[in-house]
Image 1 (cartoon, helix red, strand yellow):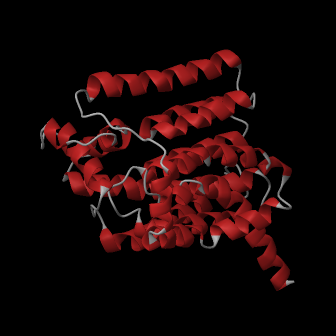
Image 2: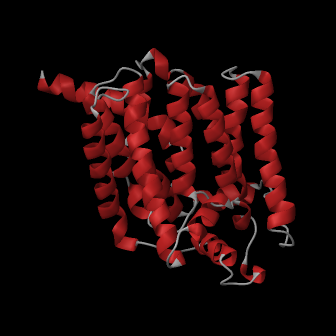
Length: 309
């Protein structure tokens, strides 16, 4: 039996297992760590298990409820459950990245390279081990990209709604799906409404009463960010290999990948707005990997093929 793409089912199992093992090796150095806002997500999962009171929660982190809720539902120690969820998300993201490039007619080498670019990156090494919602968000974005490249608008809508439940800025995936007419108007509006209802329910019913917070653009925030060497280094290392390869790949990319360019531009807006309001680090670029990696993988595989010729 051969499943979609150019790999047999046995080969897919071996590839998925290899990606999972590699992701574990990359992530295990700080498995389940908590720093800065990751502590807030960890506390949200603990709150859902009844381990801490609501007074321990800090807005806006508890409003990004889905990933902590899934982590809380996994049996075992909360810290280990959350770390396990992140590992599963990174592993699944690599598999979906590989399948995405096969969907556009790329080679096996490009598929393997796509998965490796997802895993062998500074963000996966540095951020993925911590108890953050980014791995789940990136996984949902990868599922959205795969659905779009596979011509499955309903699956894309489902991935977009799921991604919006993980992090609120992902609602732009649904906006893109509707604006690009990838889905019918009634279905697109229904998906947007569902995502919006979830956010309202979380904010006003499931996690009510938290102190308010405001993200206000400030030139002083930008000036401070430009002086923050650690954040700038984080952005540079996250861009690393993937961004240059993707930019080169966009110059002569497969026609099927063209829609990802407009999606990428739209998904740039949340990190750009965040840069005006709060400190931004490499996770801003990491979140764009599902759109960047297909371009990077195809270019990288073509370059390797020319070197062997």
